[in-house]
Image (cartoon, rainbow, N blue to C red; front, side, top):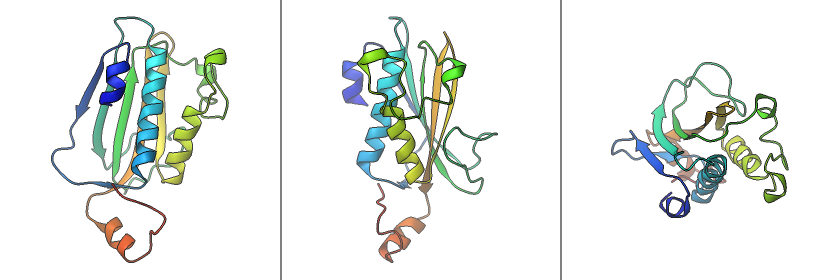
Length: 170
């Protein structure tokens, strides 16, 4: 985030209510970085007004929001790390909301390959996470990433026992 903040054309605010506790997520550091950087890049591209802003929030949730996310399935009994990236940019037209996670879909013309949100979708699906998007044209967008976590150590125990040999924890 700090690296991206130094090159961003608009201010980036960071909020977290994680308190000082250890958490393990499904996935690798590279996957987490790829998700965050893709979301920040899209938010930065969407903010064209010099007074616009981007906010990043991190929190725990044991009871995900009502309704179904665009990608993935939320388990009401599971703990999630919720990463929200919101911007005051152009927003996403309603007719595009169902297409934004498709490979090669882009509204940016030739300056973008349309693979960033597809990569985010793939990473979260592989790690049993979910994505929810709220957007309004001319107002901005909020992307909420629900990443399954283990706060009690069960993942680490299963990993040591060999059950999760293809997954890493942070």
